[in-house]
Length: 432
Image (cartoon, rainbow, N blue to C red; front, side, top):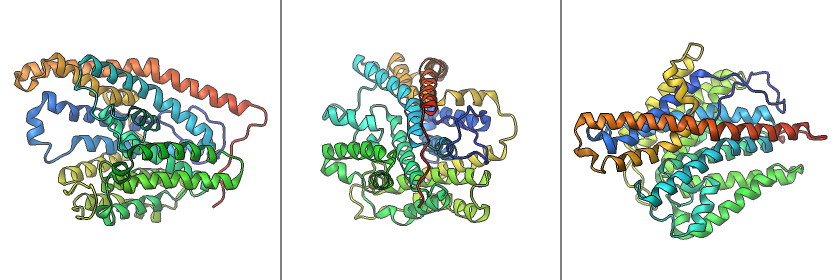
């Protein structure tokens, strides 16, 4: 997921970006989250006993991704604030996310075409141009387009978070993360049960994708303008797009969508409190309410007039997973000054590639094991599990070394070159 950065409290907006020391506790959290997500997705192939007994009580996948969401909220907004430049931030995000993402897409298409996986998801080929355009925005899960790789759905929420963080920065209200987290939490607990799912995509599928892509491109371009009125227009376009998709067009439902964004902004607020950017007690009180609101929202049943919404609550397995993710993150925060175990830190370094690549490797193992893995003896399934884990970590290490790191270095060179250009100045956030 996002890169680790350590931003001293005294760092000024627009200061030259320097390579910051890694925060090993965040890498450990990422490593743990990535391994848990791999474990979750391997259950249907290698561990049916766990799926039958433990999954109804605890959602391992949601636990892992909510740890990721908390880490992203803690790290990413301060990367933007440290750079002081929307353009540099998005160049960095592009080279951080898209190269490995492209490699995962290519691998999924190759394995699917060759018949070595579960196959390409149905619906991808119905409107190829819309599917491709939606995936390029990384908002596909909020645009009614099936994910070419199932784990891509979380990237849509990462993208929404980046858009909201950017809009807040340009508008000059980026120090309001605790209030925003509380607002989304309250919205999830109170209004989430009545909001529709997939409303726009069900009525205007192609038009929704095209309109979202145009709004996204236009809004981001406007926010880097030197004209204040144009920047404000960009803020309105980007924030409006993000909020509209969250409350009207989510595949997973408005309750969980709003809880995710509340959780990410809560992570931002925790970082702000720690660095002295936010007043401790009011911000801490607002942040403390967010997990409670999320758990309450997860147990509520959507109303009958919430169009296309799942009629069932998210359930105890979801709520327990979210609670455990919060406890894990807070434990990591409390232990941040202590040495972290290497068996978690190293997977954290390559966690983005682990996350993107492991579904295809699991599917390839399923195919290689004869597709009837549930009928295999337990020792043989354990051996395939070793093969699976070894292949996932090796593939992730190679992708990190030859795809992620070169792309990130290129992004840093491009942004450094622009900072050195004559007359180049980092735009400051507008005053609210």
